Image (cartoon, rainbow over the protein chains, first blue to last red):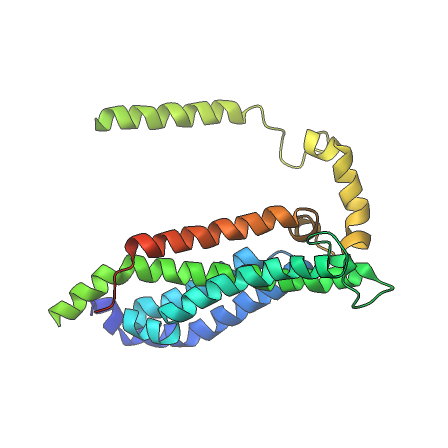
Length: 151
Length: 91
């Protein structure tokens, strides 16, 4: 454990900040349709929140929140959500990713497209956050093992 | 070797700065990106066609949805490649 990780101030600030960072990430993902933001940015912010937690509270504590198996499942789930939305449009006799073809609101295809774009953004966000967190854990794994050896 | 690397970096930087002189000024209404007829089309029709007020998102997720699917796949593939190369087996 390094000295930064033992600091009470940093541990307390991180514990207070992380929920807000994660909430802001969800806001950025959901706000992508009507303002600046979107799946890529929001996913990275969400990943940064978890990475901040893992940096201060240790890799093991971070993996308790976000295990390797969950990472892999989420990374592929996001992609399936995106591609599945596209395939859904084919099922309803549209072209791939032609959102307006899904007959949720038959008289207003643009409105349907708005909701499906939100759905697609969520899928992008899930994939990006899972890949970000798994990259961090993979790169930091040797260090945590050496720390455990020291203890 | 380090001198050579520094020389290459400085040369590349100088070339980029020299090329940057030819870019249109920031927000220049006469720049090709603003003059193209597709820009006009997207500004006029993206809200009614995709239902999204943000033109950037309308382009990203609707007009170029296939491209964005590819980007997400690239990120996913990169993550999986890093897992395959770097992840060690749990003891």
